[in-house]
Image (tube, rainbow, N blue to C red):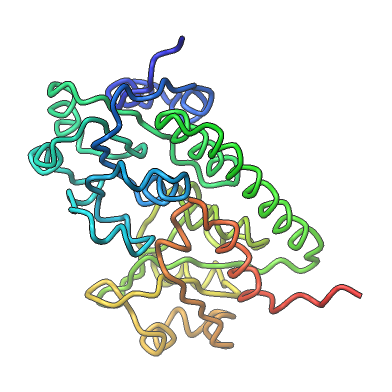
Length: 295
């Protein structure tokens, strides 16, 4: 049998640029003991609940905010800024972690503590979601439940694809991660925002770079998005719709002139877990309006 994908192996593969295709093809041996499971990555926690494995979970990371019951679990910190002491404090027997969890020195400490870890790739498309479900199901010895869930998800993604297939005039969408002191941090390609925009039948307004960057005013005006998409959140990184539309560059875009701003819950919109097909449909209807009823 093939070995479980460990985080140390995943980091090594990622450094060679082979992470996504290699990890997607991996099969996973069930944990020998998953009775004290830590889940690092909100989508993995959601999947564990969907597979009926909630009783195994003893902790989750900060990104796991759904379902509401997950908030009752101890929080071991943000998945990209883990302290190994916090993870080990809950005495885990096994860890599920999304690709990108770290930092790497924290992962090395967890590895040295001999806690079995399965690393799950984080891809931002329909296949990425079902791959997560399959790998979590294998790790937790719930392959039958994972197969059933994936059948449901495949059907929902197919329905979404059918809805978006006939769009004649695709809208361009600018996803804004944050706006601080007038500086706009926006998504390029290769992000969860880019993926959900595509699932919703729209085009990312920014394709010149990967990841997130600050955009200058000229770049915003040149992108001229039809719609602006943001996470519905407050705090220091949030921006009200009024403040956003008052931004001098945003005001000159089509979205700014028409007031086309969509706000959605961040974990729902960008989680790429069991709710992603629903999030894609909700974004689709927010962008294009409710589809005409079938005759």
